[in-house]
Length: 429
Image (cartoon, rainbow, N blue to C red; front, side):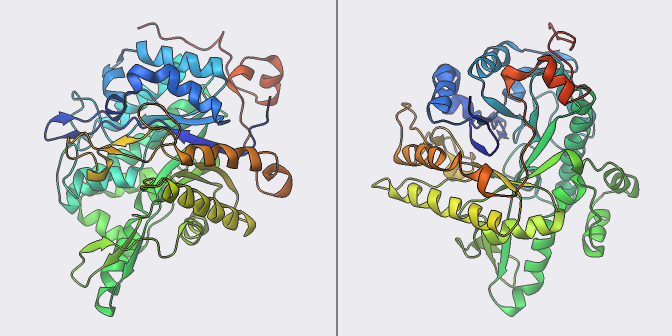
């Protein structure tokens, strides 16, 4: 068995926001419910040991203390059999209808109950992303008016943000009570806003401060005075703020950073933004985030449309990998890399807002599960670098326990407090 010391990963997108009352389930659009066994087998065929993955929240979480685990039991049972290490994505851009939206103040505590129930049912799972891309989720749902509550004010954005981040923190606490060696990978969009003229410097600086808000709150890092006033002016109370400052769980976290060619923006004097394309690149922006939080880093998402001859995505893979190596060689502990997703996506080009059925050629495989050139290139990259990275770098090594190792006596001697499959509660709902 190979030693998964560097986390080469891919993912199966389980986003499910609502748009104009219509549920958008990317697992359904991409055929995963029909092909899940094939999809998981493809992960192993590529030599990948880590998979960003989670059950669809709205289909699994039916109400307070009510769950339908049928699909999760099947899929996670197969992950365990294949010895694939899941990075469990519990909430990806949407909530069940009975919750309503991210404006619901009951969401954080209720979601912590769901996280606890999941950890009880699957005690062998160690790695989690409780809430995916907290900043993007709040921005698209409550500032841009695209998803879920479809609101577009600063107050609704701050409300969604504080509920989302609080849910993430409470979920981490709930999981740690059952799995003390759990590791949390915050998959968050790493952004930068460029002023296109001197009059745009002020708006760009404001946006560059806002991009950190979700991680500042999640990691208990005090925000600057301008951001504090912004939060308080838009509904965050002193009690809300002190909750985050007093609940830091940084020691259990890896800072996951997502980077696409769309993550950098040009800002006009009016505050309007447009895509700038890649200017700084991943290495520069990842280093900014690391200098702020001083945590180990994982590149948790990237992709690019493959292009007419299949070379654009391969070139982007190489460029992103070169950036990862640059950051590692500069001394930043980068622990993993992810091409996202396993298969092509559908309607990503409209941020899931339009139901066009448009296939976006972003995956390692197409929707017929045929490997794309970038899939072949990623398979080769992993084979080339897997054995080299642990020996050529002084970076940290993640104390990961394989699914097949959970429950062995020697594992529990290494990691005190981890419950075995025999003594962990098992929800039979």
